[in-house]
Image (cartoon, rainbow, N blue to C red; front, side, top):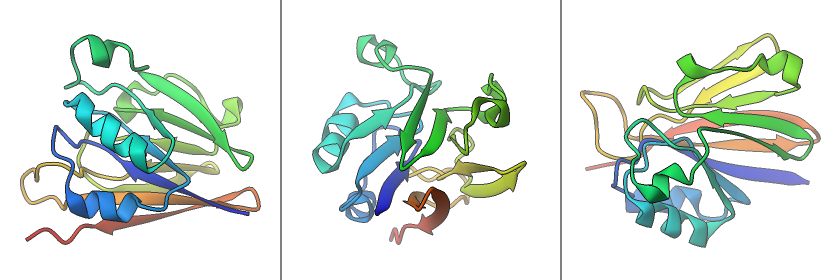
Length: 155
């Protein structure tokens, strides 16, 4: 069985139609914070089961209800998510985590260290400097995880 998990972060109150199109058909969606507008979460939850964490720009009662970190498991693969990688407070290897999802930097990235995939889907909201507007997907198949990061075509 193949599980497709849509990855999005740093929407900052702007949920682009291109991001929604990419996330369509996901089995689950993970939002790594800096949501800013709770309507973003409502719209994403219409597409697939949604898990999100609070970012440094998320405030108000709705944001306080979000966890700062969360660990979820799909297809036997443990995934830990938080907004800013610099605040990682667990040892992923010792915790059995195979994927760490973050946001904050607005820079899409995927690197493997010590058997753990560290993934930042980049920012899907407002463009920052010359960084791309991007999203990603985590594919889990037979207990293995792979990542694809996609730059959205934004006119």
